[in-house]
Each structure stands twice: as C-alpha cells, then as structure tokens.
Length: 271
Image (cartoon, rainbow, N blue to C red; front, side, top):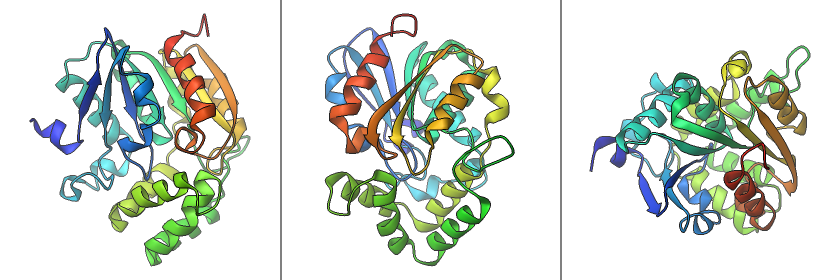
C-alpha cells in the first residue's frame, strides 16, 4: 500500500465504467457516506477517502502549514486521483470538500466530469453585499470554545450542526467523529475553513456543478447556494431540499439519497 493510500485510508468499492469520488466535510470521515454507498456500488467504482486531520487519520501526518489553506487538501485530492490513475470522475464534495473539489478542478478540469456540492459555501463570514451567516465575533467565540474545552464544545456543536436532539443517531454519529479529531488539529482545521474566502476563484470553474442544500443549515444559509449558482464560471444547477442540518446525507437519507442519485446520474442538461 502506497503512502497516499495509507494516509487517507483510501478505499475503492464497486464496479462499473464510471468512477465517483466521495469527499467528506469537517468533523466527519468517509463513514458519513454509509447511506449513499450501497446505491452506487453496482453502477460505479466508488472512491472513499479521509481528509487529513480526520480522527481516522494519523495525526503525525497532519502538517499545520500545508493545511492552513484549502489548497493543501486540493493537492491531496489530486495526488489521490493520480495514485489511482483516474482520468475522469464525478466528484461529490460535502461542505469544505466541495470547495476543495472546486480548487482542484481549476488546475485539472480534465479530471472532473462534474462536481456535486452538498452544503457548500465559498465564505462563511458576512461581508458587504454578501451573507455568509457568521460575524467575526461568532467565529472568535467558536474558536475560543473549541480551545478551552473541546469535548464540551463537540457536545454542543453536534446537535446544532446536524439539526435534532442529542439522542438522534445522526447527532451521536457526528459527535463521535468530531470527538475523534485531536483537539488542536480540529481547531486548526476549523479556523482554516471558517476563515476561507473562495469567492474570487468561482468564475474560474469550468466543470458543471450541481449545488445541493438543506433548507435549514446552521453553517450555510440558503442564499449561499444561489450565490454559488450566480457566480460559478461553469454551468450550474441548484436544488434546495426539505432536509434540516449541515449533514443531510447522514441525518435525512430518505430525502437526500434520491436527490444525490438524480444529480449523480443525470447531467445538467437532463437533470
């Protein structure tokens, strides 16, 4: 097993001519796709991997300088595609990984036939004429809470992010993967994500993008999906689902899986 495969817990499942890459967001790992994968393996080769810093990865491999920007994750994604000899894939990115896919596609558009984004945001901070959902004060408080008592912060953040009470299976699952992260790494990753601003590169995207969003999401207001639609340089389509929360593929699979499968199987001209 190569270093890239080992470091990212790389798995390739299923059979088929087409290849689909599933990339998870902050605080989770590849297990967040457990409801989707069974619907794909008969028709696709499915690539699963963990972002560096996830609780399932070796913390010794986490380079704080490399992952101080989202480009570090995009380089990882391109290295994974190179390792597997991929010449084209459908990329499904959740949360931060949607923007990671965007960055990677700008440098290598040939490797991506389409990008399916779930709960994606190019910027979390509000700005003049832009509503991202957070003020700097909100983020400073979030980072301070993470730094002072990470376990307590996880317990409070998980139900807010997922939507629902602490007893729900999805909240417990997100709490588990969130708490699996080493606290200093989790704080660094959160700072990189929440302080990122990808708005200026959206017009450079040439790969078709399917933007999928929950109607209610603590981290990403619905208006952000429309902002992406208006500002991406490529053809794009938006679907706002009746689901609640930032991890709808985990918390509302009955709603989300059919929507995801539709956008995976059909191109924008036929979706």
